[in-house]
Image (cartoon, rainbow, N blue to C red):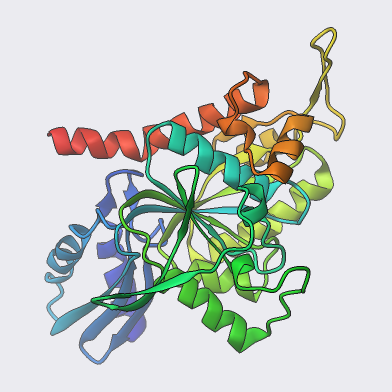
Length: 341
């Protein structure tokens, strides 16, 4: 009977559509930990700060169940944050963190309020990529308890596990400690009002990745890969993990796609070709961009000057700009049109 009830609940929940992504809240992974105990329904709803209208809609849909005495909905959100996106890769070394920093920079230049959470506990490089030296993290008192205050650099709010670690020391945290640190970073940071919070996920499919995905209101992930088949195979494992927890893949970014000849402008696919397009076709998700190999991307990361914020024109900068415009067309512009209505 409980199984039949659960199926009935899921079917009703699938009638609740999230208007921005134009999909139901079950397929988007917004409903988690659904339980039916006796005649009561319990669920967690993972939402952005602008999606609280979904709660009464869910209550209304489930009120049609004659056997249900009451529905308990636990709202899981990051205060002030509209859209939380994960940046992920199947393996290290494909430029995931570099891509995350430049997407954040490009979104900032488009006028968005952006935060960047460096949750890559195995290689927290974002502070260096944004030119942050050794900086003490402040803890402030708020009505909901003590919170970490993120640092702000080039208009981007930043929090990183790397800011808690000693320089040149490995982050050798084991399961329970790792889980506590990650949940603290998700729940105890005073971000203020943000249009986007980008979470730089650790590469692969381990405990840290699963904890972050399950404990945060990530509405979707962007997968970073390189064209070669080895990287594509690793990304497929990542995709399986996201599907298990019900988080959709919003798009693919292919990094190191080609080298542009400085003399003739021809493109050479040093690491092969077609990997990003192949994944996009398999997932029926957009290929958001193909980023060329450019030494200025590397030097910009080393010196804290993301290429997306550089003053000179470059194909790589143009790709990051187009990615930001694409994300805005999905999330921000819809919000503005809704407000105008």
